[in-house]
Image (cartoon, rainbow, N blue to C red; front, side, top):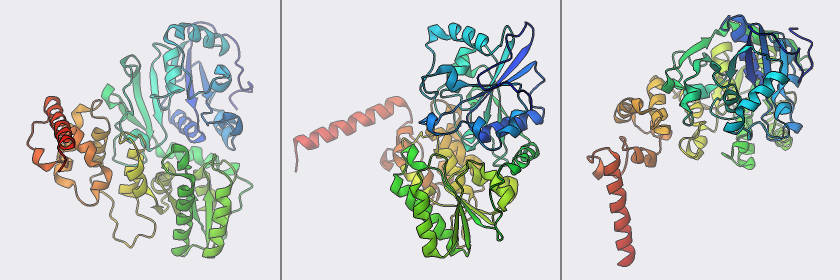
Length: 460
Protein backbone atom coordinates (compact mmCIF):
# COMPACT_ATOMS: atom_id res chain seq x y z
CA UNK A 1 0.00 0.00 0.00
CA UNK A 2 1.32 3.46 -0.89
CA UNK A 3 0.75 4.92 2.58
CA UNK A 4 -0.62 4.10 5.98
CA UNK A 5 -1.75 7.68 6.52
CA UNK A 6 -5.33 7.74 7.89
CA UNK A 7 -8.13 9.40 5.95
CA UNK A 8 -8.10 13.17 6.37
CA UNK A 9 -4.44 13.28 7.44
CA UNK A 10 -1.30 14.02 5.46
CA UNK A 11 2.41 13.51 5.98
CA UNK A 12 3.13 17.10 6.93
CA UNK A 13 4.27 20.22 5.12
CA UNK A 14 6.52 19.59 2.14
CA UNK A 15 9.52 21.56 1.11
CA UNK A 16 9.76 23.66 -2.04
CA UNK A 17 10.42 22.39 -5.53
CA UNK A 18 8.20 19.30 -5.69
CA UNK A 19 5.07 18.51 -7.66
CA UNK A 20 1.89 17.16 -6.12
CA UNK A 21 -0.68 15.54 -8.36
CA UNK A 22 -4.19 15.86 -6.89
CA UNK A 23 -6.73 13.28 -8.07
CA UNK A 24 -10.43 13.65 -7.24
CA UNK A 25 -12.79 10.67 -7.29
CA UNK A 26 -16.40 10.15 -6.23
CA UNK A 27 -17.03 6.62 -7.52
CA UNK A 28 -15.15 3.34 -7.34
CA UNK A 29 -15.39 3.11 -11.14
CA UNK A 30 -13.74 6.53 -11.42
CA UNK A 31 -10.98 5.54 -9.01
CA UNK A 32 -10.39 2.39 -11.09
CA UNK A 33 -10.12 4.56 -14.21
CA UNK A 34 -7.51 6.75 -12.50
CA UNK A 35 -5.59 3.66 -11.36
CA UNK A 36 -5.54 2.33 -14.92
CA UNK A 37 -4.35 5.68 -16.29
CA UNK A 38 -1.52 5.78 -13.73
CA UNK A 39 -0.54 2.18 -14.46
CA UNK A 40 -0.48 2.97 -18.19
CA UNK A 41 1.95 5.83 -17.65
CA UNK A 42 -0.49 8.58 -18.63
CA UNK A 43 0.71 10.66 -15.67
CA UNK A 44 4.31 11.72 -15.35
CA UNK A 45 6.19 10.83 -12.15
CA UNK A 46 5.50 13.23 -9.30
CA UNK A 47 6.82 13.94 -5.81
CA UNK A 48 3.46 13.01 -4.37
CA UNK A 49 0.06 11.75 -5.45
CA UNK A 50 -2.90 12.80 -3.33
CA UNK A 51 -6.34 11.23 -3.72
CA UNK A 52 -9.30 13.41 -2.70
CA UNK A 53 -12.43 11.29 -2.20
CA UNK A 54 -15.83 12.96 -2.56
CA UNK A 55 -19.11 11.47 -1.39
CA UNK A 56 -21.75 13.19 -3.52
CA UNK A 57 -24.73 11.13 -2.35
CA UNK A 58 -27.78 13.17 -1.39
CA UNK A 59 -27.29 11.95 2.19
CA UNK A 60 -23.57 11.15 2.48
CA UNK A 61 -23.97 9.95 6.06
CA UNK A 62 -26.22 7.12 4.82
CA UNK A 63 -24.03 5.91 1.97
CA UNK A 64 -20.43 4.72 2.17
CA UNK A 65 -17.68 6.78 0.62
CA UNK A 66 -15.59 4.98 -1.98
CA UNK A 67 -12.73 4.43 0.48
CA UNK A 68 -15.10 2.20 2.48
CA UNK A 69 -16.21 0.08 -0.48
CA UNK A 70 -14.99 -3.44 -1.31
CA UNK A 71 -12.02 -3.28 -3.64
CA UNK A 72 -10.80 0.20 -2.74
CA UNK A 73 -7.72 -1.12 -0.95
CA UNK A 74 -6.49 -2.57 -4.25
CA UNK A 75 -6.71 0.91 -5.81
CA UNK A 76 -5.34 2.83 -2.81
CA UNK A 77 -1.73 1.75 -3.38
CA UNK A 78 -1.36 4.09 -6.38
CA UNK A 79 -1.62 7.14 -4.11
CA UNK A 80 0.66 8.44 -1.39
CA UNK A 81 -2.02 10.11 0.69
CA UNK A 82 -5.78 10.23 1.02
CA UNK A 83 -8.11 13.02 2.19
CA UNK A 84 -11.87 13.48 2.34
CA UNK A 85 -13.39 16.49 0.61
CA UNK A 86 -16.55 16.08 2.70
CA UNK A 87 -14.55 16.41 5.89
CA UNK A 88 -12.58 19.33 4.46
CA UNK A 89 -15.66 21.46 3.78
CA UNK A 90 -17.98 20.11 6.52
CA UNK A 91 -20.78 20.80 7.26
CA UNK A 92 -21.44 21.78 3.63
CA UNK A 93 -22.49 19.29 0.94
CA UNK A 94 -19.95 18.73 -1.87
CA UNK A 95 -22.51 19.19 -4.62
CA UNK A 96 -23.78 22.51 -3.29
CA UNK A 97 -20.71 24.29 -1.98
CA UNK A 98 -18.19 26.47 -3.79
CA UNK A 99 -15.91 29.19 -2.44
CA UNK A 100 -16.74 32.82 -3.00
CA UNK A 101 -14.41 34.28 -5.61
CA UNK A 102 -12.84 36.63 -3.06
CA UNK A 103 -12.14 33.69 -0.75
CA UNK A 104 -10.29 31.40 -3.17
CA UNK A 105 -6.80 32.63 -2.15
CA UNK A 106 -7.68 31.93 1.49
CA UNK A 107 -8.94 28.46 0.62
CA UNK A 108 -5.82 27.63 -1.35
CA UNK A 109 -3.62 28.63 1.59
CA UNK A 110 -5.85 26.60 3.91
CA UNK A 111 -5.70 23.47 1.72
CA UNK A 112 -1.95 23.79 1.22
CA UNK A 113 -1.56 23.74 4.99
CA UNK A 114 -4.22 21.10 5.75
CA UNK A 115 -3.10 18.76 2.97
CA UNK A 116 0.62 19.29 3.47
CA UNK A 117 1.18 20.74 0.00
CA UNK A 118 3.71 23.32 1.11
CA UNK A 119 5.08 25.25 -1.87
CA UNK A 120 4.69 22.35 -4.31
CA UNK A 121 3.45 23.05 -7.78
CA UNK A 122 0.05 21.42 -8.15
CA UNK A 123 -1.59 19.47 -10.98
CA UNK A 124 -5.29 18.69 -10.61
CA UNK A 125 -7.26 15.82 -12.15
CA UNK A 126 -11.06 15.92 -11.82
CA UNK A 127 -14.25 14.47 -13.25
CA UNK A 128 -17.43 16.40 -14.19
CA UNK A 129 -15.62 19.72 -14.33
CA UNK A 130 -18.88 21.61 -15.00
CA UNK A 131 -20.24 21.04 -11.48
CA UNK A 132 -19.13 20.92 -7.86
CA UNK A 133 -17.09 19.54 -6.23
CA UNK A 134 -14.74 19.40 -9.23
CA UNK A 135 -15.51 23.00 -10.18
CA UNK A 136 -14.85 24.23 -6.64
CA UNK A 137 -11.49 22.47 -6.45
CA UNK A 138 -10.33 23.80 -9.82
CA UNK A 139 -11.35 27.32 -8.76
CA UNK A 140 -9.38 27.08 -5.52
CA UNK A 141 -6.15 25.96 -7.20
CA UNK A 142 -6.07 28.89 -9.59
CA UNK A 143 -3.59 28.45 -12.39
CA UNK A 144 -3.00 24.74 -11.84
CA UNK A 145 -2.99 22.70 -15.07
CA UNK A 146 -6.06 20.46 -15.29
CA UNK A 147 -6.76 16.98 -16.55
CA UNK A 148 -10.36 15.83 -16.86
CA UNK A 149 -11.16 12.13 -16.83
CA UNK A 150 -14.45 10.61 -17.86
CA UNK A 151 -15.53 7.18 -16.65
CA UNK A 152 -18.83 7.04 -18.49
CA UNK A 153 -20.81 7.79 -21.63
CA UNK A 154 -21.34 11.49 -20.88
CA UNK A 155 -17.90 12.29 -22.28
CA UNK A 156 -19.26 11.58 -25.76
CA UNK A 157 -21.79 14.38 -25.36
CA UNK A 158 -21.34 18.15 -25.25
CA UNK A 159 -20.19 20.08 -22.21
CA UNK A 160 -23.44 20.53 -20.30
CA UNK A 161 -22.98 24.26 -19.71
CA UNK A 162 -20.62 27.09 -20.52
CA UNK A 163 -17.39 26.91 -18.56
CA UNK A 164 -15.40 29.95 -17.52
CA UNK A 165 -12.56 30.27 -20.07
CA UNK A 166 -10.15 30.81 -17.16
CA UNK A 167 -10.93 27.21 -16.16
CA UNK A 168 -11.61 25.61 -19.54
CA UNK A 169 -8.42 27.09 -20.94
CA UNK A 170 -6.38 25.29 -18.27
CA UNK A 171 -7.61 21.82 -19.29
CA UNK A 172 -4.79 20.00 -21.04
CA UNK A 173 -6.50 16.73 -21.96
CA UNK A 174 -9.54 14.51 -21.52
CA UNK A 175 -8.87 10.92 -20.46
CA UNK A 176 -11.63 8.45 -21.28
CA UNK A 177 -12.31 4.76 -21.65
CA UNK A 178 -12.84 3.43 -25.17
CA UNK A 179 -16.44 2.40 -24.49
CA UNK A 180 -17.58 3.05 -28.06
CA UNK A 181 -14.64 2.33 -30.37
CA UNK A 182 -14.36 4.89 -33.12
CA UNK A 183 -16.56 7.50 -31.43
CA UNK A 184 -14.72 10.69 -30.41
CA UNK A 185 -15.90 12.61 -27.33
CA UNK A 186 -17.40 16.09 -27.73
CA UNK A 187 -16.73 17.07 -24.13
CA UNK A 188 -14.48 20.15 -23.87
CA UNK A 189 -13.70 20.26 -27.59
CA UNK A 190 -14.82 23.91 -27.51
CA UNK A 191 -11.49 24.57 -25.75
CA UNK A 192 -9.50 22.49 -28.21
CA UNK A 193 -8.98 19.74 -25.62
CA UNK A 194 -7.85 16.50 -27.22
CA UNK A 195 -9.26 13.22 -25.88
CA UNK A 196 -6.83 10.50 -24.85
CA UNK A 197 -7.88 6.88 -24.39
CA UNK A 198 -7.10 5.01 -21.17
CA UNK A 199 -5.84 1.67 -22.55
CA UNK A 200 -8.47 -1.03 -22.28
CA UNK A 201 -5.96 -3.66 -21.18
CA UNK A 202 -4.77 -1.47 -18.31
CA UNK A 203 -8.35 -0.97 -17.19
CA UNK A 204 -9.08 -4.70 -17.44
CA UNK A 205 -6.03 -5.50 -15.30
CA UNK A 206 -7.27 -3.10 -12.63
CA UNK A 207 -10.72 -4.68 -12.71
CA UNK A 208 -9.21 -8.16 -12.58
CA UNK A 209 -7.42 -7.18 -9.37
CA UNK A 210 -10.81 -6.41 -7.80
CA UNK A 211 -12.20 -9.87 -8.51
CA UNK A 212 -11.35 -11.20 -5.05
CA UNK A 213 -13.25 -8.40 -3.30
CA UNK A 214 -16.56 -10.23 -3.58
CA UNK A 215 -15.71 -13.43 -1.72
CA UNK A 216 -19.21 -13.63 -0.30
CA UNK A 217 -20.73 -13.94 -3.78
CA UNK A 218 -21.52 -17.43 -4.97
CA UNK A 219 -20.72 -18.32 -8.54
CA UNK A 220 -23.91 -19.66 -10.16
CA UNK A 221 -23.76 -23.11 -11.70
CA UNK A 222 -25.43 -21.72 -14.83
CA UNK A 223 -24.44 -18.30 -16.29
CA UNK A 224 -27.23 -15.95 -15.17
CA UNK A 225 -28.83 -12.88 -16.69
CA UNK A 226 -27.60 -9.78 -14.86
CA UNK A 227 -30.04 -6.87 -14.48
CA UNK A 228 -28.58 -3.45 -13.71
CA UNK A 229 -30.62 -0.98 -11.68
CA UNK A 230 -29.99 2.76 -12.02
CA UNK A 231 -32.35 4.54 -9.61
CA UNK A 232 -33.77 6.79 -12.32
CA UNK A 233 -36.34 8.19 -9.93
CA UNK A 234 -33.51 10.04 -8.20
CA UNK A 235 -33.00 11.90 -11.47
CA UNK A 236 -36.74 12.73 -11.51
CA UNK A 237 -37.00 11.11 -14.95
CA UNK A 238 -39.27 8.30 -13.76
CA UNK A 239 -41.38 7.93 -10.67
CA UNK A 240 -40.46 5.20 -8.19
CA UNK A 241 -43.44 3.12 -9.38
CA UNK A 242 -42.38 3.51 -13.03
CA UNK A 243 -38.85 2.47 -12.24
CA UNK A 244 -40.14 -0.54 -10.32
CA UNK A 245 -42.14 -1.55 -13.39
CA UNK A 246 -39.04 -1.10 -15.56
CA UNK A 247 -37.05 -3.49 -13.39
CA UNK A 248 -39.93 -5.95 -13.44
CA UNK A 249 -39.97 -5.69 -17.24
CA UNK A 250 -36.26 -6.55 -17.32
CA UNK A 251 -36.77 -9.66 -15.18
CA UNK A 252 -39.75 -10.77 -17.26
CA UNK A 253 -37.79 -10.22 -20.47
CA UNK A 254 -34.85 -12.25 -19.23
CA UNK A 255 -37.18 -15.08 -18.20
CA UNK A 256 -38.90 -14.97 -21.60
CA UNK A 257 -35.51 -15.51 -23.24
CA UNK A 258 -35.10 -18.72 -21.27
CA UNK A 259 -32.88 -17.59 -18.41
CA UNK A 260 -33.60 -19.55 -15.25
CA UNK A 261 -31.40 -17.47 -12.93
CA UNK A 262 -31.52 -13.66 -12.78
CA UNK A 263 -29.12 -11.54 -10.72
CA UNK A 264 -30.28 -8.03 -9.87
CA UNK A 265 -27.67 -5.41 -9.01
CA UNK A 266 -29.55 -2.40 -7.61
CA UNK A 267 -28.23 1.11 -7.51
CA UNK A 268 -26.50 1.64 -4.13
CA UNK A 269 -29.16 4.22 -3.17
CA UNK A 270 -32.14 2.12 -4.24
CA UNK A 271 -34.85 1.39 -1.61
CA UNK A 272 -35.09 -2.23 -0.45
CA UNK A 273 -38.74 -2.53 -1.49
CA UNK A 274 -37.70 -2.90 -5.12
CA UNK A 275 -35.94 -6.16 -4.29
CA UNK A 276 -39.09 -7.61 -2.72
CA UNK A 277 -41.19 -6.65 -5.74
CA UNK A 278 -38.68 -8.32 -8.02
CA UNK A 279 -38.72 -11.44 -5.89
CA UNK A 280 -42.49 -11.69 -6.33
CA UNK A 281 -42.16 -11.25 -10.09
CA UNK A 282 -39.34 -13.79 -10.30
CA UNK A 283 -41.51 -16.38 -8.55
CA UNK A 284 -44.31 -15.76 -11.04
CA UNK A 285 -41.87 -16.12 -13.94
CA UNK A 286 -40.37 -19.29 -12.48
CA UNK A 287 -36.80 -18.00 -12.23
CA UNK A 288 -34.34 -17.92 -9.36
CA UNK A 289 -33.50 -14.37 -8.29
CA UNK A 290 -30.34 -13.22 -6.54
CA UNK A 291 -30.14 -9.63 -5.29
CA UNK A 292 -26.66 -8.18 -4.80
CA UNK A 293 -26.70 -6.06 -1.66
CA UNK A 294 -22.96 -5.29 -1.66
CA UNK A 295 -21.71 -2.10 -3.41
CA UNK A 296 -19.39 -3.96 -5.78
CA UNK A 297 -18.68 -2.89 -9.34
CA UNK A 298 -20.73 -4.54 -12.06
CA UNK A 299 -17.44 -5.48 -13.70
CA UNK A 300 -16.54 -7.58 -10.66
CA UNK A 301 -19.74 -9.52 -11.25
CA UNK A 302 -18.76 -9.99 -14.90
CA UNK A 303 -15.54 -11.62 -13.72
CA UNK A 304 -17.09 -13.72 -10.97
CA UNK A 305 -20.42 -14.76 -12.48
CA UNK A 306 -19.71 -14.78 -16.22
CA UNK A 307 -23.30 -13.67 -17.04
CA UNK A 308 -24.89 -14.88 -20.24
CA UNK A 309 -26.70 -11.54 -20.68
CA UNK A 310 -26.57 -8.06 -19.14
CA UNK A 311 -29.77 -6.00 -19.17
CA UNK A 312 -30.05 -2.32 -18.30
CA UNK A 313 -31.39 1.04 -19.34
CA UNK A 314 -28.46 3.29 -20.19
CA UNK A 315 -25.85 2.24 -17.65
CA UNK A 316 -22.22 2.65 -18.68
CA UNK A 317 -21.78 -0.93 -17.44
CA UNK A 318 -23.78 -2.11 -20.47
CA UNK A 319 -21.03 -0.82 -22.74
CA UNK A 320 -18.19 -2.19 -20.60
CA UNK A 321 -19.89 -5.61 -20.67
CA UNK A 322 -20.02 -5.56 -24.45
CA UNK A 323 -16.80 -3.72 -25.33
CA UNK A 324 -14.47 -5.12 -22.64
CA UNK A 325 -15.94 -8.54 -21.80
CA UNK A 326 -17.76 -9.51 -25.01
CA UNK A 327 -20.94 -10.27 -23.04
CA UNK A 328 -24.29 -9.94 -24.87
CA UNK A 329 -26.31 -6.92 -23.70
CA UNK A 330 -29.90 -5.73 -24.03
CA UNK A 331 -31.65 -2.48 -23.17
CA UNK A 332 -35.06 -1.59 -21.81
CA UNK A 333 -36.75 1.76 -21.18
CA UNK A 334 -34.63 3.99 -23.41
CA UNK A 335 -37.62 4.96 -25.54
CA UNK A 336 -39.42 6.29 -22.46
CA UNK A 337 -36.35 8.18 -21.28
CA UNK A 338 -35.78 9.80 -24.67
CA UNK A 339 -39.30 11.15 -24.41
CA UNK A 340 -39.11 12.15 -20.75
CA UNK A 341 -35.70 13.83 -20.54
CA UNK A 342 -36.23 17.53 -20.01
CA UNK A 343 -35.04 20.02 -20.93
CA UNK A 344 -33.66 18.78 -24.21
CA UNK A 345 -30.21 19.83 -22.97
CA UNK A 346 -30.32 17.23 -20.16
CA UNK A 347 -26.82 15.75 -20.01
CA UNK A 348 -28.18 12.20 -19.86
CA UNK A 349 -29.52 12.54 -23.41
CA UNK A 350 -26.32 11.45 -25.16
CA UNK A 351 -25.77 8.34 -22.98
CA UNK A 352 -29.39 7.30 -23.57
CA UNK A 353 -29.04 7.99 -27.30
CA UNK A 354 -25.85 5.93 -27.56
CA UNK A 355 -27.34 2.92 -25.80
CA UNK A 356 -30.59 3.17 -27.78
CA UNK A 357 -28.71 3.38 -31.07
CA UNK A 358 -26.17 0.61 -30.38
CA UNK A 359 -27.84 -1.92 -28.08
CA UNK A 360 -30.71 -4.18 -29.14
CA UNK A 361 -33.92 -3.98 -27.11
CA UNK A 362 -34.72 -6.80 -24.70
CA UNK A 363 -36.65 -9.43 -26.63
CA UNK A 364 -35.38 -8.25 -30.01
CA UNK A 365 -36.72 -10.33 -32.87
CA UNK A 366 -33.55 -9.91 -34.88
CA UNK A 367 -34.71 -6.80 -36.74
CA UNK A 368 -32.56 -4.35 -34.76
CA UNK A 369 -29.45 -3.02 -36.46
CA UNK A 370 -26.91 -0.77 -34.71
CA UNK A 371 -26.76 2.76 -36.11
CA UNK A 372 -23.72 2.92 -38.38
CA UNK A 373 -23.91 6.73 -38.43
CA UNK A 374 -23.57 7.08 -34.67
CA UNK A 375 -20.87 9.75 -34.90
CA UNK A 376 -23.02 11.92 -37.15
CA UNK A 377 -26.05 11.35 -34.92
CA UNK A 378 -24.16 12.43 -31.79
CA UNK A 379 -22.93 15.60 -33.51
CA UNK A 380 -26.51 16.46 -34.48
CA UNK A 381 -27.85 15.74 -30.99
CA UNK A 382 -24.90 17.57 -29.43
CA UNK A 383 -25.55 20.68 -31.50
CA UNK A 384 -29.27 20.59 -30.70
CA UNK A 385 -28.39 20.35 -27.02
CA UNK A 386 -25.75 23.09 -26.88
CA UNK A 387 -25.87 25.13 -30.07
CA UNK A 388 -24.26 28.20 -28.48
CA UNK A 389 -21.31 26.24 -27.13
CA UNK A 390 -20.75 24.29 -30.38
CA UNK A 391 -21.80 26.56 -33.29
CA UNK A 392 -19.34 24.78 -35.57
CA UNK A 393 -21.46 21.62 -35.44
CA UNK A 394 -24.41 23.25 -37.20
CA UNK A 395 -23.46 22.12 -40.76
CA UNK A 396 -23.05 18.52 -39.54
CA UNK A 397 -26.43 18.70 -37.77
CA UNK A 398 -28.14 20.08 -40.89
CA UNK A 399 -26.66 17.33 -43.07
CA UNK A 400 -27.75 14.58 -40.71
CA UNK A 401 -31.27 15.93 -40.25
CA UNK A 402 -31.70 16.56 -43.97
CA UNK A 403 -30.63 13.06 -44.99
CA UNK A 404 -31.36 10.71 -42.10
CA UNK A 405 -34.42 11.94 -40.22
CA UNK A 406 -36.86 9.04 -40.37
CA UNK A 407 -39.27 7.08 -38.23
CA UNK A 408 -36.51 5.60 -36.08
CA UNK A 409 -34.19 8.62 -35.73
CA UNK A 410 -37.01 11.06 -34.86
CA UNK A 411 -36.90 9.61 -31.32
CA UNK A 412 -33.59 11.42 -30.73
CA UNK A 413 -34.95 14.89 -31.48
CA UNK A 414 -37.79 17.20 -30.47
CA UNK A 415 -39.61 19.10 -33.19
CA UNK A 416 -39.91 22.12 -30.92
CA UNK A 417 -36.15 22.15 -30.37
CA UNK A 418 -35.45 21.88 -34.09
CA UNK A 419 -37.87 24.72 -34.71
CA UNK A 420 -36.19 26.95 -32.14
CA UNK A 421 -32.85 26.38 -33.86
CA UNK A 422 -34.22 26.62 -37.42
CA UNK A 423 -33.01 23.12 -38.28
CA UNK A 424 -34.43 20.64 -40.82
CA UNK A 425 -37.48 18.94 -39.36
CA UNK A 426 -38.76 22.16 -37.83
CA UNK A 427 -42.37 23.30 -38.03
CA UNK A 428 -44.30 24.89 -39.56
CA UNK A 429 -43.06 23.67 -42.93
CA UNK A 430 -44.31 26.78 -44.73
CA UNK A 431 -41.71 28.80 -42.84
CA UNK A 432 -38.81 26.61 -43.93
CA UNK A 433 -37.60 29.19 -46.43
CA UNK A 434 -37.25 31.98 -43.88
CA UNK A 435 -33.57 32.89 -43.30
CA UNK A 436 -32.19 31.10 -40.27
CA UNK A 437 -31.13 34.05 -38.15
CA UNK A 438 -32.19 35.53 -34.83
CA UNK A 439 -34.00 38.52 -36.35
CA UNK A 440 -36.17 36.34 -38.58
CA UNK A 441 -37.07 34.04 -35.71
CA UNK A 442 -38.01 37.04 -33.54
CA UNK A 443 -40.34 38.32 -36.27
CA UNK A 444 -42.00 34.91 -36.57
CA UNK A 445 -42.61 34.78 -32.81
CA UNK A 446 -44.13 38.27 -32.84
CA UNK A 447 -46.42 37.35 -35.75
CA UNK A 448 -47.63 34.26 -33.92
CA UNK A 449 -48.28 36.27 -30.74
CA UNK A 450 -50.23 38.90 -32.71
CA UNK A 451 -52.32 36.19 -34.41
CA UNK A 452 -53.21 34.60 -31.06
CA UNK A 453 -54.20 38.01 -29.67
CA UNK A 454 -56.46 38.70 -32.65
CA UNK A 455 -58.14 35.28 -32.37
CA UNK A 456 -58.89 35.86 -28.70
CA UNK A 457 -60.32 39.31 -29.46
CA UNK A 458 -62.47 38.03 -32.34
CA UNK A 459 -63.58 34.48 -31.53
CA UNK A 460 -65.62 32.71 -34.18
